[in-house]
Image (cartoon, one colour):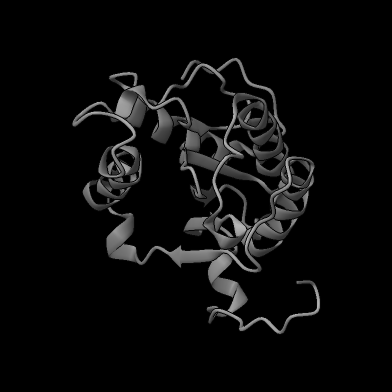
Length: 193
């Protein structure tokens, strides 16, 4: 497989993935194989996503791991954030535990850089709910049971108490994101969010 010629998905100019970009990433398992999504992998996924988010200054307000692919929405925190580099790093890191399970990611992830109108609150939260409802649409959970799917969550570096399903998640997420944008990801704070 390594010697096969792979067609490249079209990419926007690299500048679209830098700074405060909002990008919906979809990373698919090669041949859409299933069986890799087990609790041990899930914990490793969260660890690697945490390192990626910290290293490349981004947040992940939602992720959803499906049996044959992963969805993640990443938002850049810093003007130096580069999501193309972050994606390359994450894919390399997550490829190792996948390989130990006998799986690999498809050659290239699919991404969608959100336009200004898609970044507005109603459209953005609608996208996140659409992602969260993937398990429901695939029959993995009952209708309106998407909150019970154990492989959906969020990851904001330094804020493990944020939970995607808490009633005040979105106001708390946006306050935290604004704080990180203003103050950077490395400065400790006593500010209550």
